[in-house]
Length: 200
Length: 200
DNA sequence: GTCTATAGCGGGATAGAC
DNA sequence: GTCTATCCCGCTATAGAC
Image (cartoon, rainbow over all chains, first blue to last red; front, side, top):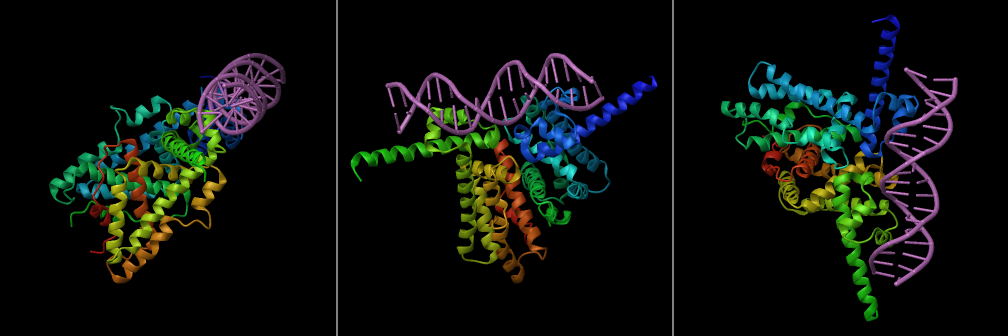
């Protein structure tokens, strides 16, 4: 690849990142519909025309971010399964990682966007399906095996595992939302959250 | 009041209710910004012109609903305090009521709207202030005394009470969101949620 | 690669007929 | 009290200059 072209590619990658970073802020604060391309352009400190040079549409930007968010969520679950220890310990490890992650605003904002995407109808069909369709692999589904193992081993309370998983993620979601509204909001210790699972 | 006028008043009240009911659905599903007056009109089965006959603006409808939602939330807390029993028992009673409330879609939708209102910037200043401003009386603040009493009595775990309250409402919020997306989603028992509070 | 100007459309809000 | 027609603004997306 000629020298010039390499430089151009670098610029292009940088710009895309820059736009995505800005879009994350704007989408999280205002929501997919209320977010204006001009807001994103302003936040990224470039013209709104340029945004369209890098992305086909507002929708495409949003979709890109949602996928990123989903990947990251599933990543933690995957990592948790690779840890060594009992299922309960793996869950605790995962909870710690997630709660730590809330200190990074990027993670929290990604989370919020994912939530908007699955909560609101005013979002492209494609995105909703990706998150909530038949084929979708949700955090709840992915965490289920871990919970069931823990129940077999007797560490985890014998409640319906789906209910447990939902309760767990409900809690995570709720905290993320709080964190957005009030960035100094105290985040509980993983141990506190884990009390729900424990079959003492 | 003359007969005719009474009838008119009744019609007006009905219409207002009808519009609010429809708006609740539409706002919850699409969000304040994406919701179109024409959507609301269609849902209420009347013309969009009529909506403006009863409400000044889309904003006014939204505000009305948010206030209603807030009143209802605070109502449960107030009722809980009136119950007899230990603070922990009062909290459990409250949790039961809230979880039961989730079976009613109206409650859940109101909740979701309240959340949108406090999460998104794309919402009139007045509404945001009402919920999150300095003067706002939040569920967290209102529940704090109950938690602190429980800690003095030793029933409730000795974690920072604000963290506890936030954690608790995070649960509730998260569950409500889940319930919206997936209306058959299993709701946990109050006992399960209360495990977080307990200082066994 | 980046900008400015503008087309084109959709929706909030209003006017006025019935 | 209810409806239809319409004004008007703002936003997405594109065209074209630099």
